[in-house]
Image (cartoon, rainbow, N blue to C red; front, side, top):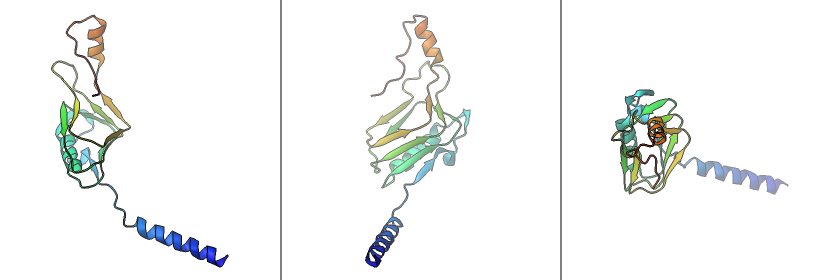
Amino acid sequence: MAQLETSIILLLLTLISTTSFVEAAPVYSIANYGAKSDGRTDSTKSLQAAWEAACGSSGSATIYVPTGGFLVRPVTFNGPCMSSRITFRIDGALVAPSGYSGAGELIVFDHVEGVSLYGGTIDGRGSALWACKAAGGRHCPRGSTVR
């Protein structure tokens, strides 16, 4: 019995000592880059700055969107990145500008791999688009697409 207890203690000490060397992935909050959660202030540059920091990380990285609404204009996240695993953790909402005239794509990932999106909302403010389509408009944009 004493040998079993010794083995368990050694196993626990090994686990504790190895987990203390594991580094936590850096978290890049868009709020730390000046984003405002009022849904009116343009947070595109803050989101882009967080992307550039995460993309330049050597390991896993997380881009954090806290609670609240963050106005985002069309943005492209370019790669390739040093980090092979970037997580977008959205606890709030990324909100498109009102109206769809000249909007194009809201969020584009170009030449990147290993990106995950979790939680939150991406609000494209589609009510004007749906009203255009319901009215039988011929010049309505396509709407959201994932490629």
